[in-house]
Length: 478
Length: 93
Image 1 (cartoon, rainbow over the protein chains, first blue to last red):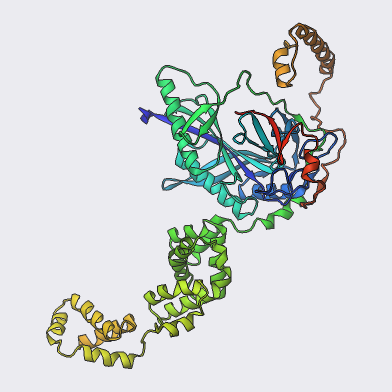
Image 2: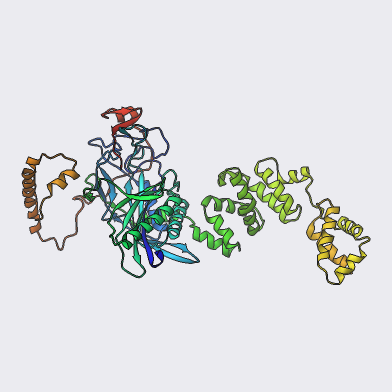
């Protein structure tokens, strides 16, 4: 009876910042290196080593502040969050607690046909931990500290989300924004963006229930599965007369189930206190203002521009703004050519994206082909070649097999747009068709299609259909 | 003053405490807290919390990479290593 139940969800999203070096050390911030390759004595927690703040991380946090409508705090403080785990060599994670760098933001997401405002309580900078590998040896865990000290921005929403779909829209929107402002690569598979889901259930309209936190979800599929499973699990407990115990849950990707973490003799107590090795971050208004121009155009700005200035279809515009590299490719083509943006957009999300998908390419790999693409689109929109011929030539242009005009000539795909020549062909085609001509004049439109087909065939498919149509109509109406 | 949960404190600090020493450490900690509680006598209702005695801001560096040591340097203090990993008793959550 899940009908009268609703879920209440708040999210903690961890975004790895795309800096060159780590948050407090100058080791490379790089995924996929050899084990312990990117570790220095600060990262490995050697006694006496002092952390030094990477200003690049502050700049990225400020950028995020602008993009997610946050209040950017001039004063923030790093604190130590204390716990023991083998992949945390310092014995504490440096994070922000009482005074985060960003507070009270929001974004708008789609919920059904409407927009919904999701409030964000805070976002703070913190260090990532290392990685434990448990499946190499039955008795030992292997530790790789490369990820230790990677800068994370933890973005904590209010419990404003009420379905798995809303959660996915929220994370997609966050991911899109963070990628637009170039602070996170958004690669969920590599763990650059991970989410903890806080979920509770209640009967519609009642007070908030006890929540459980599902840790470390890194794909949309798993997030959806985990939410649906946990929702039902909590309802079953309450329906069976039980009570929800506040717990940290793990999601088992092989079974699709959530389970409570073990070793919970004592609840967590992180004993936060200000890190004595790091002075507070005090920013001037000037430092904050300086970052604003780096934010650039956000997806919603582009959407508005595409609809208002270029009259694109909303669905097509949304596909283009989904990723910044799409938008960049599109805008490059517009700036380089006089072909109508709307025409370019249709070809981009149609045949060009299909080609990219088929050949497993990156969108920006076409950045140096934009001139050829728009030259081809110009030939199509000027009726030099047919739409069909354009579709035939496009993959060859994208494969770099030649210039569009050369390919048209080589393949003999140029349309016959010489009206004298077409008139001759049409007149010939109409010989002996008196009966059908009469039918047309009596109002049968179907006959027109027959005539167009016959004339196109006579031109071996190269006749300009628009022109044929026009001349035919003139002839037939006589 | 609240009671000292010495079991919990030693658990959080990952310190093994012999049963017969529990009372001793519990009392010692109580004494320390009692002494620190003297600070409560000061009226701080009109004082801003202070995070650092200096008025300075955090020192910063530019986002640049530099490498100052090898993998072997980092692993040289490891109790055990396997290839280029630290090798530790299994801890699985």
